[in-house]
Length: 480
Image (tube, rainbow, N blue to C red; front, side, top):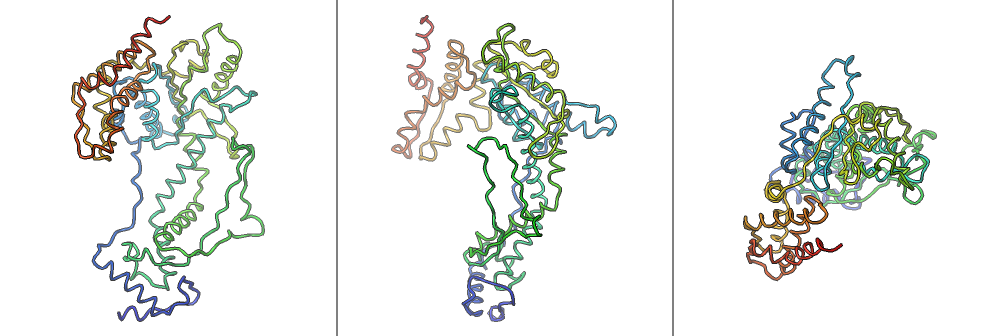
């Protein structure tokens, strides 16, 4: 208590309890400290761990990562792994030859539901580089209403800006946290490092302080919420040397600390050249995945109506994939010759050879994904880390119901999926979602009323659950 009696308000420091005597404030501090005396000191958060650096992963390591989520399709995963490793290799060679090395773009061909999109989706989570995935059908030929393909590069640059800013934030987080704690402790009647441990342990969370924060202004939106045609410029700091406006807020420490920390991090980010680093990362390490590219391809001699514009989209893609300079609304020019393009499509009604010859030549690595078999379907619902079956089991555990699938039930689900795909439209692994949802429909509906029970699903139960679905499929074979 001797320490508590020595607290006083230093000049210039404002607190939310300015009308309270210093002795009362000190008593509150000591009470909070006493409540935390038995609690172990918690070190400051170090932030979420950084994602695996793809450039440091060997092709086999990347293959193993993808194997956790994607069954089969070894050729496609190998091509992607080699392409990404080559990005790392290019950075290791002499600068003189580095400029001559261009990425080898990839075309993935295969029926729907075999893993083309999933490879791209998992790649986005692994890669430590600017990454964007787009649908080819979203774009129109220049001069037509809609987005043109150059907006792909703008999206990639936006992704690069966000990633670069986040990387810089992680680098400065510890220093920013120290400054944020200093500001909170100063507002806390001028106490110093003696209470830093209590601040970190959460003992002071419910004490209110008055903090001064920069006022955040909402950025103007473009009309109809579409793609912006105008660039918003922040000139608040250029007119007469104006400083950002601040507001004083009374907040509990548990709310004030994150707000002050974010402000301190942003101050440090402002001292870095984010735009230049984002531009370098976009040009040197950027990856673009263009899905459904077969939807802008028409069979030779079959152009008609709106499809004439589809060929125009291919022609607009040519310079991007080959290498050009794109002017963006961010007032930066981006070179695309070192960006890696991965295109994919089912090519049900057209062939890859129906693409423009020039575009085919710009996608030199061609990988064919194989249709899925019964064995593949069984592996899909058993091997991946968070497969469909594990998801359903986890969902029912929230209701207190133990869901058990026998091995013969899993094989029956796989067999039915393969049968339906071979009879009607083949939608690949997506068929498993339809079947498993039908299988667990009854237990999912009755789950809240069956708490504490164990529900076993075997092959006979699966057959009964999807009986109506299979009958409809068999009848369709005889309908003209």
